Image (cartoon, rainbow, N blue to C red; front, side):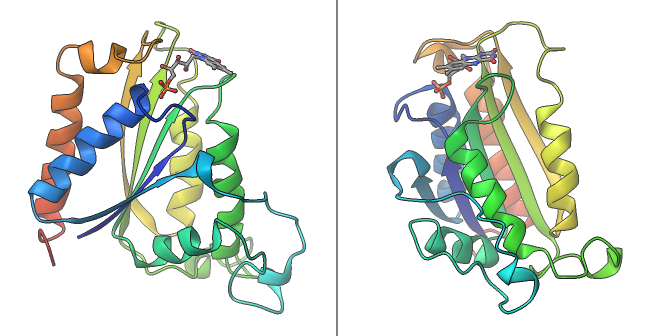
Length: 197
Ligand SMILES: Cc1cc2nc3c(=O)[nH]c(=O)nc-3n(C[C@H](O)[C@H](O)[C@H](O)COP(=O)(O)O)c2cc1C
């Protein structure tokens, strides 16, 4: 199983990074190939709405730090999006990546629901969300929104691990059972995808 884990927080040792590490370490220990990308360190642009990917080309024409990341998505079985909640959304670093995945949608994606994606179907999306506010009803829309769009792209399975009321670095690690739950998800997915194959 190939895991691609995208780190959306600027904090390298923050809460979502700790959740991502728990996932990646458990997946690697179970035999998965794991690659993590610190998005904040990339020189990358958002989608320019040039629509080249809906006419002239099969891939995004921008050539920057996200180019190899988009190629790695095509090769992954499990895509992990780890992010804090910023103003009720994913971080700008992660949203920049998400907008560039517009290039995975076919020119006919809006009309032909059987041919929406250029990606091989059967991939799994995992979101790891860290939010400061303790109320679970707040910002609960983030995961279903991306689950919906990524399903179009061939991510037919999706899973969420969400921690509310965690604010400072170390809070996720101190939350009872959170990292164990995250690691257990990684082990389960690795087994389901055939371990290291
Ligand atoms: C710019 C900014 C915006 C934030 N916006 C929200 C928010 O809308 N809702 C919320 O619950 N927490 C918000 N937070 C708190 C973070 O979600 C919280 O500290 C989280 O644990 C950080 O995760 P990290 O350590 O992985 O970066 C915000 C933090 C920052 C720095």
